[in-house]
Image (cartoon, rainbow, N blue to C red; front, side, top):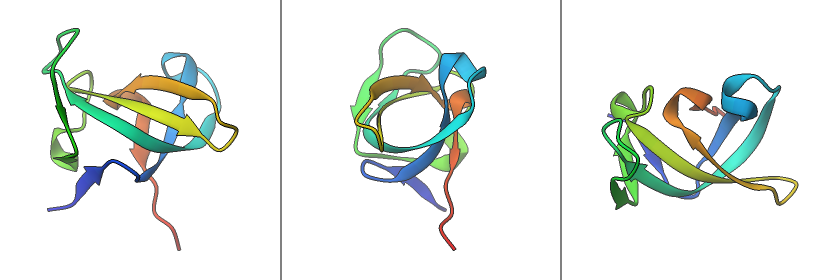
Length: 79
């Protein structure tokens, strides 16, 4: 099973999904179970990355630091 890990690249949509996608690097992962706060982890199965079950801290290539719900990110697959 594949995992989302700190340091992975992801596609991120800012503005709670309303902005154009940007490439970003995951700098933190928190399993929230839909609540405001949760448990910080270094990795999580991608099958658990949905809706508000997971929140991530991210850094864009422009050194913009944000957080996002799982619903705002998608796996980045490099060719």
